[in-house]
Amino acid sequence: MKKIGESAIADPTSNCFQCAVDPETGEEMPAKAAQVMEAGSKLFTEQGFGAVSMDQVAKTAGVSKATVYAHFQSKEQLFVAIVRAACLSYAENVMPEVRDAPDMRSALTRIGRSIAGFLMAPRTMAIYRVIVAEGPRFPELAQRYYETGPRNFKRLLTQYLKDAVAQGLLKIENPRLASDQFCSMVRGPLYMQVLLGLKDDPDLLDVDTVVDGAVEVFLRSYGADAKRAG
Image 1 (cartoon, rainbow, N blue to C red):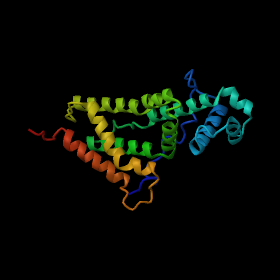
Image 2 (tube, rainbow, N blue to C red):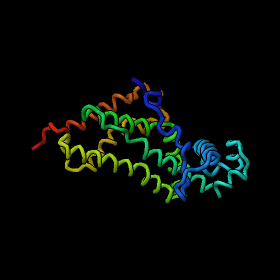
Image 3 (tube, rainbow, N blue to C red):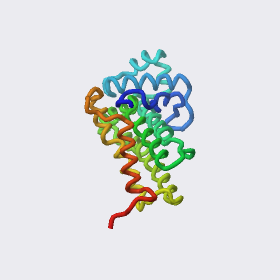
Image 4 (cartoon, one colour):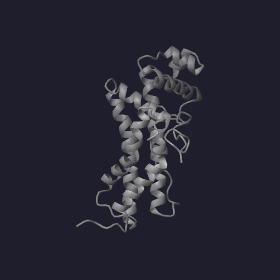
């Protein structure tokens, strides 16, 4: 089994700029724009938004400053595009295909591993740190990140749970609450440790143990055969 930070789960955000979209039009961006976004993401996450200049972005991307400004009129606009691409990657990649799963346990395990893989991915963590740091300066960006990323995924998971209830696979009175509970069980033991860079802590739990435990608790509470108190 793999510890946090090891390659047990692929980084679903690793190619999130290859099909980046314009934050204003929603259309796919040219290759040069994606190249600039990749460079900007690297610099912003390493140095912070305020410390980075468009000259640095151009140099890191290997393009002229004129090329950078041809695609992004300001550093703020570039930052917005980078965050939006990360949000779209979140929405598109974190909810796995589970229709072929043989049972509810397998489906939830697949979902839990996907949640863990996305949240612990280096790019996801780096973007999150920048959002937290720059949130007071860009409150609308923080809101967009939450709406497009975490909240959108919770909606997808909630709908999946509702469908499972309708099929008699689960017994849940409040699917929205249940989706929050499941995500929290997967996220809780792992996220803070990764955020603080505690990858070498001997007391760290591995991803498989955390996900399997979350699925077990969830099914004991909400499984079709689960016994209700009282």
